[in-house]
Length: 167
Ligand code: SME
Image (tube, rainbow, N blue to C red; front, top):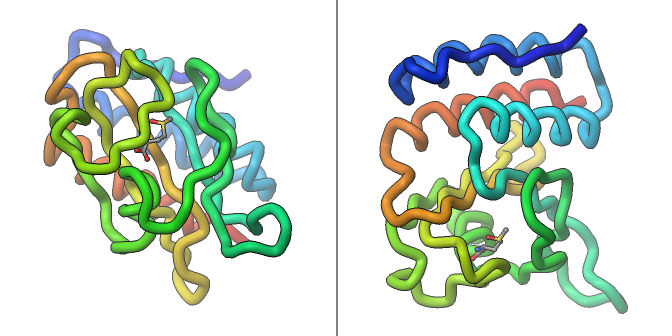
């Protein structure tokens, strides 16, 4: 049986400390990336109750155009399906090759509003050694200022765990 158990009374850092080893073992026994990303989205939603948590994966654009981010496994309300290179927070994190914390989406030029309820956001690239960025992790909150350097540190660690599992 697979269950995610975190103490909701713990601090945010403690919750990530509890969650990451569980995610490691959850995805360690499975080689299929889609299955693992689906479970990571569910684990994040379960542990933190995020409004939206999921992945956009680098994929071919329709009609032979350039690569785009395409919606992957996620938990939360329906979302935009395609994001171009350099566009929005996700496309910027992909282009710049770094994680981006957005305290207030209204202050991020070019932010793509998949939901009018989204007020803050963090995006972390999935950077596979020797292969480059294959996608991004995106988490949205309905409140301003939800994400900080604690989230950045642990979500970057989470993305490294995911990337190490990519065959
Ligand atoms: N807000 C994102 C788009 C994805 S949704 O938030 C799920 C962005 O600006 O890239």
